[in-house]
Length: 136
Image (cartoon, rainbow, N blue to C red; front, side, top):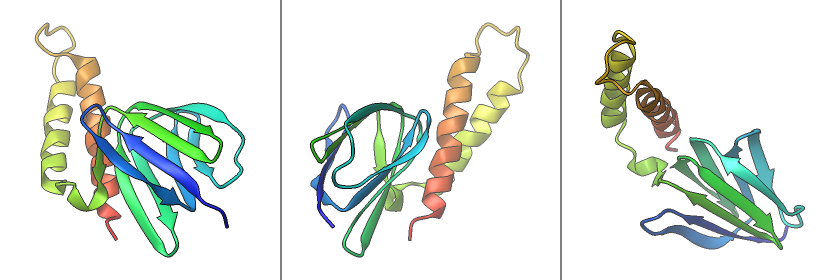
């Protein structure tokens, strides 16, 4: 099997830059996988699990929103944030989920509550917890 060049980039740093055998990412139209020779395409990235393998090693990352480009055996993933699954603090994610649920349960007429932001925080916390459960 041939190799792909994978780059995962956030505004802060390059999280991954290496050759891999396969990439599976959470696209806006559903999860997609990329192998060597994949047709060029662009996709939005939704919060979820990005995983990639090289040989018998598989790595998992939590990624937030962004986009991905596949072209000439290169996969570029540009996202707002990314974390290795092994570095996710599940307790912190659980607390964030509780706070978001609390905000969403408040009266919709309250001006000091940003419900769209709370919904987004809830989605991120749920995804973070799911990805952290798959650390191995």
